[in-house]
Image (cartoon, rainbow, N blue to C red; front, side, top):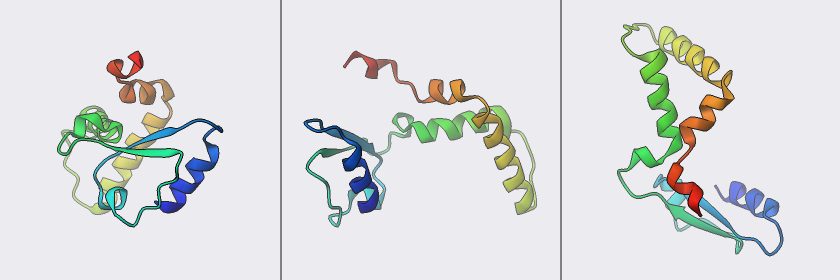
Length: 107
């Protein structure tokens, strides 16, 4: 995580500041993080997966391509997840719409 923060800090324009929204995974909240001066970490509230766009992607995949199936061998599970993921990445507009938050555009 420290390497990622350092890379993000390099891309922030001079005289600008980045707000990085993170979930509360242990590696996002550890005291061992070295947070550059031009980044602020903004943790999502606990137990609010609906605010995390990655969770919304998985929900979309389950609702559209991964539900109502019986998959027994592990390889079938992996194959179906990969196929669903490939369908999704062929639709970049869909990915954008899944992650959009109307309330976030007023700032």
